[in-house]
Every structure is written in C-alpha cells, then in structure tokens.
Length: 115
Image (cartoon, rainbow, N blue to C red):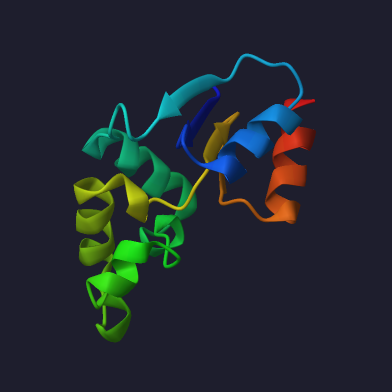
C-alpha cells in the first residue's frame, strides 16, 4: 500500500499533492490522525534513523530549546510521537521505499515512482 503522511494545513504539502500524478495513494493527515508507534517503526525501518524523519525546521524545535541539546535516536522518536510538527513532511512510502521531505529532488523521485 502506497501512503503519504502529510499535514492538510501545510501549503507546501498541498502544492506537492497537486503536482502528483493520479494514483492510489492512501492519504494520512498527521494532525487529524496522529501517527502510531507502529507506523513510525515502519518509517524507521525504511529510513534507518529517527533523526532522518525529524524536522529541525519545526518552530517547537527552536522554542523548546532542542537545537541546543544533543538529541539521541530515542529523543527523536519520542518527540515525533509527542507532536506531529516534528515529523519532516511529507513522508511517502511507495513500493517499500521511503521518501522524506519536500526537496525538489525528493518530489521528483516521488513523481517518478508514482508514474
């Protein structure tokens, strides 16, 4: 099952979704339906680290002073599960491969994988 984890209120996520070819993606809005530990574990297995899934651009990252701390993989996991804003968005899982974030290169790879 191909899936996208995104934030419906995020302009960047909406723009990326509009650019996608028609497909059978399952959409998962992480604000309305927070990710579960099992879903995060699946992402971890595909990406190899919780840090790769963690958004250091999140406002909470700065406001909580996390940028001044030395975070472990366990910390990254805990924060992602505690608040949706810490998941780097969007996250696609397509044919057993994970695509994390909104870089142009990543979005091009996703479009290619879905075409």
